[in-house]
Image 1 (cartoon, rainbow, N blue to C red):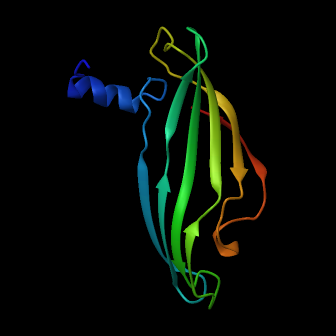
Image 2 (cartoon, rainbow, N blue to C red):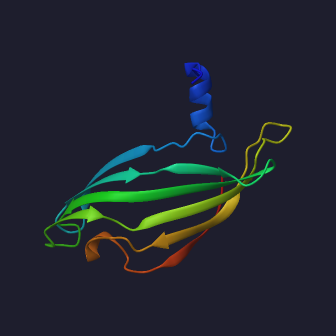
Image 3 (spheres, rainbow, N blue to C red):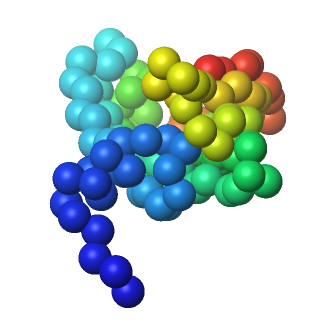
Length: 133
């Protein structure tokens, strides 16, 4: 297997239409929710998976799956831990950047009710909207 220089790998990982699959994590901590100054900690798992449709077009799947712990967010509601609702995006994007180097993509965004606790999600399916990459 050929070795990819670190600089080239970093460039490919920051490019959403490059071929590598990436799985970034985002950690958030919030304090001061609701009347009891509740706490909330969320780890967002965000895999990005590009699919080559043909030599001219890619389909890029981006998922955001939150894993949440929260305490007294809705008044004296106690603690909850588990999955939140999933946000799923699909971007149709040209396989190559434009002549000016712009990388673009457009597509739908969906909300999928995957929460493991009523207080961690909306309990509803829905289109979140359209998005640009």
